[in-house]
Length: 288
Image 1: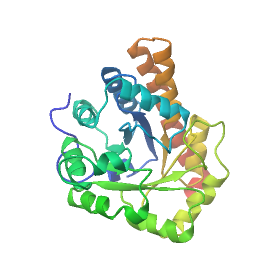
Image 2 (image 1 turned 120 degrees about the horizontal axis):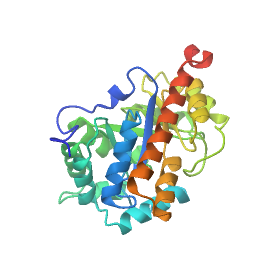
Image 3 (image 1 turned 60 degrees about the horizontal axis):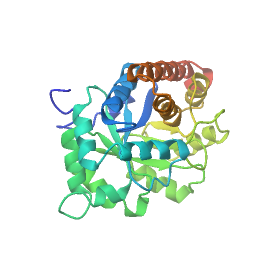
Image 4 (image 1 turned 90 degrees about the vertical axis):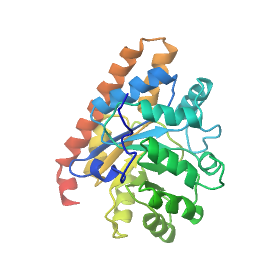
């Protein structure tokens, strides 16, 4: 257990994650498949070289997620994960990387006695959360959460889809801080065999807005080659969720020892980080 919350005071540390080499940003659902095992799995990814970790707060209606992460949410909820348990989990983690809470707005808005997102953001900041990704929050309704993040020195990450129009793209960029989450493809989350051809196009469209926010690409990345190719296409980071959640699920279903599953997560994490670093050395990425 950490002696004190990682980001409990001061400002978000997310900019440090993108200061230098390409960032590896893994995702796991907190509490999947149970509290203690999940702590070890997140810490294994930190040892693998994660620069920032997206930590899912399970919600009963995860509309943006594919079957892999939906099942992770089910396992976590069945294991007893709640909002209060999530904050306890964050406090118990022994990692020294920025943490991003990925969840749905209903949980944020309804937390605490006062209506609105501020109580949730205040508590999350106190426990060590550096920023937020909220897939179901439209940019047009994100003002109160943006204000709460500013008040407590936290970042709010926008998600950009391949089909996001120019006007909406600029609004998402103006709203965001920390980094931009670039969807590599349409649809829901889930590991894929190849990187979408639209990734480079999406990265270029975001660059044309003039933003200096880091661009991290997610949705479908699961291998050294894909991580390398995404960075070579001009991304500043790779976000990996389903491929890691698959390892957790397989370990749970096979009743493997927690340490063995943690080792597998660490092994894939190192592969993905090395892929991202390899992508930084390509001609295309250097020209970006």
